[in-house]
Amino acid sequence: MTAIPAPSSTSVAGVSTHTLSQGKRVALLTLTVFLALAIYYFVGVDEGMTSVFGKTMVIHEWVHDSRHFLGFPCH
Amino acid sequence: MEIRVIGRGALAGLIAGVLGFVFARIFAEPLVDKAIDYESGRGEILNALRQAAGLPTEAEGPEIFSRSIQSTIGIATGIIGISVAFGALVAVGFLLLHGRLSVRPRVLAWCVAAFGFLGIFLLPFMKYPANPPAIGHDFTIGARGRLYLTLVALSLILLGAAVLAAYRLAPRFGGVGAVVIAGVGFLVLFGIVLAVFPSLGNLHANVAVAHELGFPRAATETPQPIVNTLGKTLTVDGHTYTAGQIVYPGFDADVLWKFRWYSLLNQVLIWTTIALVFGTLMERLLGRQASAPAGAEAREPAVVA
Image (cartoon, rainbow over all chains, first blue to last red):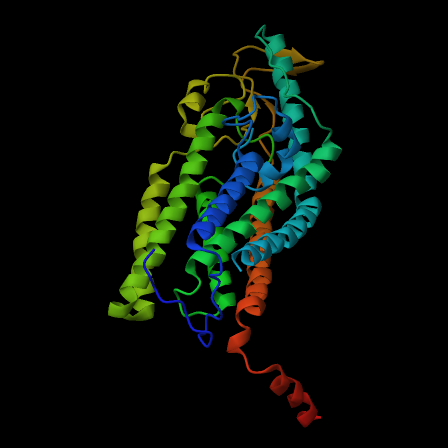
């Protein structure tokens, strides 16, 4: 994004989190978001509306109670 | 540093997930059992009625795992897993914003967690709240899933736009003025979204079965009482049901209310725990330079004593 200067160590926000190179930082954040969305999908959606590994219902049945309680549509 | 921040987010999520699981074990599971009892009773009587009327019967869903597995490690996997994911996402949001705003690390952590709670859970919940088993038709799962996920995405986008608008308007209208303007704008837009998204009972597939036994037209998919709508007296297991008589009750309103209330409280618990734990960890990781030297704090109690 835009180049806003990193805060100095005396700033209220504290020390900077930037220690990785920009490329590695982008890769790490992308990977984290991808993994988190994968968990969200498999806990909440898979083997219901859509299914990645075929309609076996194993994942669906395993997380069944949490899917209801977490607010996802279920049967 | 980035990896340490994300690791701490995931750790906060793990702690939140364990608490959320304990909460669910205590408060959700008794209701899930009641809902499943209702569902199987309903399925049995529907099949018996259909059989008595000479209509085709429907098979029950599969039972791959026992209830005791679903209600322990099954629900633990789901709640702890998704809480870790939420914690990691909060950490990513924190990393993207940290250094751009002049707020303490813990305040930023709380704000990101509050954003997640509202956008991912509470706003979509207003239109499509959590439902226990027995509520939700198999044949509408595709439509319901698409609607729900679209509403989650729209909630996040509108909420993000409102925050950005408040931030941009603040120099001209002041902090309070900017928040009020952005807040009212958000409420109007989100209100339109809530009005446009259909009630689940009005989905085509549900309207199409409204003439069938046990599926009368309703605004939601919450099971209505099964009424003998076949126009003739039916005898099932020695009981006689005349035309128009209620054969099986609708879903228990108290069970539904409690399930939704506890679902909401569970999310409050999960997101609050993430906010507090992650906020404290970020304050310790990043805020050290801002505080006074440790020696100054340590001496004070001695002076008082």
